[in-house]
Length: 71
Length: 260
Image (cartoon, rainbow over all chains, first blue to last red; front, side, top):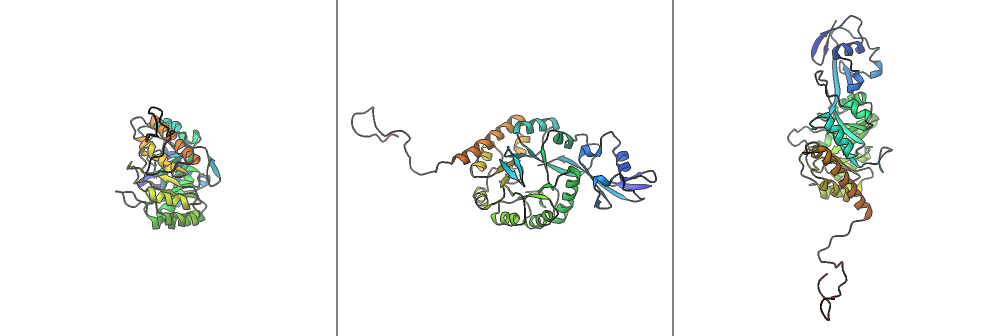
C-alpha cells in the first residue's frame, strides 16, 4: 500500500502498522523515542503506546514531528 | 527554592536550547548555567537531521519545557501542545503564540484563549506574554502555573525595557513570574531578580556569546546575586548623600568637615 509521510509518498507492505511505517521511514537504528517523536495520522495525534497496534490503510497521511532546539 | 506546579527547582535560571553552534556546546553551556528547566521546540521531522538533542537532554536529567513556537493562533497552539506532550512525555508547556515574524510579539487574545483550554486539558501552562499586568492576572485566574512576561523582543538583547510593568506584575502575581526574552547581559538578569522576579529565561545571550560556556556561568552568578540581593533587602535610593564615615574632621583643627 502507499501512504503519505510528511508529504512524501512511500510504499509499505500490506498489514503494516504505524510502528512498522516509522521503522522503515526512519531507516536507521535510532528508536523514535530518542528523537522525541510525535505522530499524527490523518490529523489525529496517535499516542506512542498505540503505535504498534495501529493498522494503516492505503492513502493514510502521517505527519511526523520531532524535538528540536528552541528558546 | 523556586516552585512551579508543586515542582521545586534550586536554579532560578531557565535556559533555551536554540542558536548554539553545536549540540555539544549547548550541553556544556547548560551544565555551566546550573539550569534545571530547559526549553525545546517541535518541528516537522527532518530525516537527514542527525543532531538529535532530545535524548542527551533527557539523559542529563533536565526537566523539559517544550514551547509552541510556530503557532499563530490558539487552535494551532493547542494542536502543537498535544504533539509536544506526546513527543516529549511532559504536560509542561511554554505557551507562545506570535503571529508576527518581525517582532515575535505574543498575541494576548489567542494566548488567553489557548491557556484556558490547555489548563482544562491538563497541561502545566507557562505563557509567554507581553509585560501586561492585567493579562498576567487573567492568565493566573485561568490556572496558569507561572507567567513569563517579556523584558524585550525575543533575541533583541535590549534588556529590561518593560521594567515598570514587570514591577507591577511581580507585586500582583500569586504565581511565579519568570522574566523571559530580551535579556542580553547578566547585569540585566540580576536587575530582574533584584526587582523580585522568581526566575529568568535566557537563550540568545548565552548561545550567541563568543564563549557560551563562560557566559552561562556569568548568568548563573548574576541570577544568584540578584536573588540574594532581593532577599537581603535592597537599600533605598535617595537624592542626597548620606555619609558612610563619621563626620569628625581629624586632619583639621576645630569644626566638623563636610567630607563624608
